[in-house]
Length: 493
Ligand SMILES: Cc1cc2nc3c(=O)[nH]c(=O)nc-3n(C[C@H](O)[C@H](O)[C@H](O)COP(=O)(O)OP(=O)(O)OC[C@H]3O[C@@H](n4cnc5c(N)ncnc54)[C@H](O)[C@@H]3O)c2cc1C
Image (cartoon, rainbow, N blue to C red; front, side):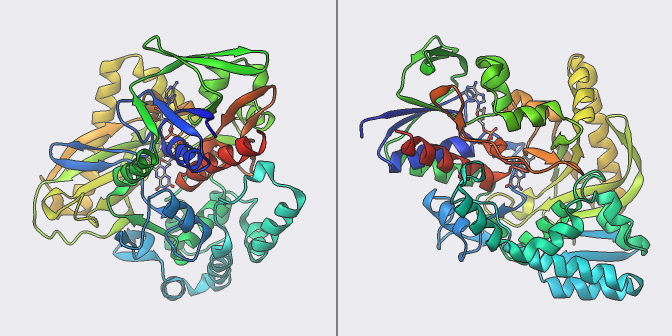
């Protein structure tokens, strides 16, 4: 068609938009501020170890689903690619008792019921609801924000089995959900994975991703996923420019006429797609008057829409010995420690040992990821202004966590090397992420899911993609948002 599309941001949404635009016959160039593509879906090497920053699980790894087809089209998944399926969502070890949210739902139900027969009714409800939520998948055919009534009804019908779970848990916080159970261990299991103000439905729905076999990890992790997407993009003729920060957007008569790179390059195109955090666009590069009404509502109601962010530390395990560590994600009680002024008494860690190409026996990694909210972000942001204190605090926390892991697993004593620590501010620096958000907004009790259009009212040739088009975010939403932006752009030609 000879029409040119310029994409800003080479995260998963940007490269996805690039592939769909090329497949629709456009010529495409992507501009990315970092020296490497991937955005938040990234990983890096430290001291010979690999730190996978992103994929704990990728939804869409089940062949029968529409999402699988999207990942296949983007080059992310193929029949020949190895997929790692974890035995459980997460487990808890406490006082010698281990509880697992097994991917095999009936196995988990049995384990939970044996431990807590007094919670028979609530446990059965939880597992029954998880089963019914297996039909819920992030949408990838049509953008919910642009759906016509018929498409909306079709979506509603496809999720009708989930209505019981949505009614039961959709308006409940984790804290309220936990209070439904009597057993001390069941309460601890559900209380200490997500933050207490999270919506209970996120916990049940995330578990359902495991029981329905859609959540898994493709070989090569986050870097592998992005690398395969980029190979597809380039094989179709797309061009990627790295290390160019877009610092200005020039608008004349409701049209973007050019954008400016920090290297002074003036970039002209017929269409532009913003595939990065929209807060940065609307509050730094274009007039706030263009702001989507749903996004504005979420920015204006931070008590209802909390950004998901985290403090992270990665440890290398300096031995080839089989240390008999648990698989995947585990939580356990520990001595108290403070993070951003709040006291914690549980530790969550994840063992990275499943993918030989990234984590061979002599290079296994443990990461702790402590969920942080807006207030915690403000704490880290203030601290970052005093860089030595900021670094000291990150290191202090890493040491505290190392001691707690070593106490729990004495076989690790003296074998953990701190590879790196990351605060919520890291994601702002790396990706211009609003409040360090690594997923999109997390709606709190009483606040509804919101959807953001790919179009911008008042601007004819600038479109939006990114995980922020939908609450919760994540890789499937980011990738689908790229497709939606191209679908809408094609239809508005
Ligand atoms: C620790 C962590 C764990 C996660 N775990 C999972 C998981 O297990 N499963 C899952 O599905 N998701 C997970 N996610 C979320 C997932 O990484 C994101 O949803 C997804 O990568 C977001 O993609 P995006 O394209 O919307 O945005 P981004 O990744 O933010 O990409 C935007 C890109 O735009 C660039 N950019 C910004 N401003 C400019 C500018 N002015 N000029 C040029 N370029 C610019 C940025 O540098 C960035 O590369 C995790 C994220 C993190 C950080």
